[in-house]
Amino acid sequence: MEKYRRSVNKNLLKSLIYYNGYTFEKIGKLCNPPVSKTAISLLINEKIENERLIIQISELFHVPHLILFPFVQVQDSQPENQRKTIDVEDP
Image 1 (cartoon, rainbow, N blue to C red):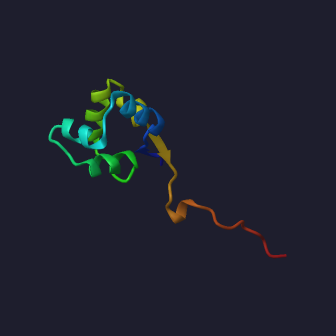
Image 2 (image 1 turned 120 degrees about the vertical axis):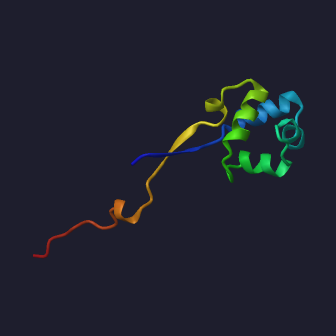
Image 3 (image 1 turned 180 degrees about the vertical axis):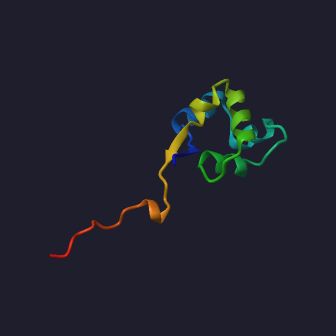
């Protein structure tokens, strides 16, 4: 079963922040409701996923959220789905 999580296009996002003269604190204040600069930092460093913040930040920079925060495939990590040894027949 394929699973997906949000990633962050960090180079593009950091370039947009720098170009527009924003800080994490300013971005947080522009969100509705306002959030702390720590919440913005955690989102950008992929420590949390918050769809509401993702959409608001994307709208702030007028860039589609699928470009700034694309979905990436996550490999299934269930032990029963991983083959750890090769079956060898006894002679």
